[in-house]
Image 1 (cartoon, one colour):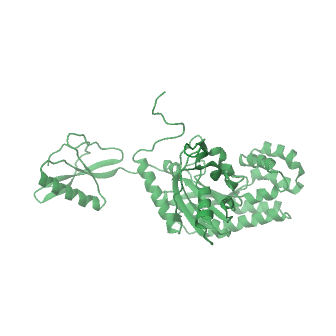
Image 2: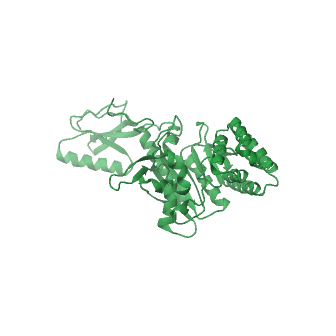
Image 3: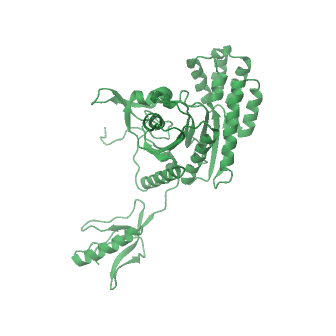
Length: 409
């Protein structure tokens, strides 16, 4: 076995992709901070119970777990930052009112989410605590779209769903039985949904059964799907309330993005369910033309902080910056200035001053090392060089592509 082989679905990022990734991370964080989201850094590793308590239980199967040699307790590498942000808000900050937090941090999955993904994504996101208003969900969904705009996308489709509707329709069903339906709906397995209705679902009211049987087909243009759902749920008070909340969020979101530079289309998919123990209300997912899968996910997860001492309304979104970067074209080669190596001390000082001045104004300057080849590539193109003239060291254009320096003044 090759000693240097990486685990499956784990990979390196090399120049210029790594630089492209870092630039995106900085731009997304700047965007979030411009909305008042404060940056947090949380531990890469925590005790397992801290990452899986309460609404974090859904993360349990995604954790990579080991024994901490220091304490003897079980620890895990985080698979999400949201539970950590909820812990920070509930236990460490203790602030009343609205708290906005953001992050860009690596996580680790026990298994990849899909065959094209990685197990060690770089998640960036924003979390908003302390506000149950539909406008909080609208702000977070708007930020999700803006973050994709920062990444260079100009067309985004956002699809909404509503966990509270599922809860309303399955009221009175045991948790284990409800999870079976939850999984079948998420996969749009019509046959499995029908079997569930003939089994555990047979105890539900007939009108709830009828709506559940329709859910795998409940997707498309936003207002149309919601209106059809309203018609089918008429007289079911809890379901009607869930749909009213969804309508308010969707309409508020549409107002927020209507005049933006990004072309946003809005859809609703009432069977697009995820995070059975995690989400509590409206959920949303963002899609771009170059990806068959969602590139960003978000939604409401009220009460997650209860496990850390304080239950709070909460909503947020996250996106894998590595996956997003992989969908973008490589940046053009960055032009660099090649500087020679000189032995004479006075010339060295003059050359170093010229190099420093260029770097201060943002130029990339690569200096030759004595006896070593200075190779272009990895996203750099030496289009100019520093040359000693009568008036001092000056930058001159290269006539052809330079592959290495040849030394001398």
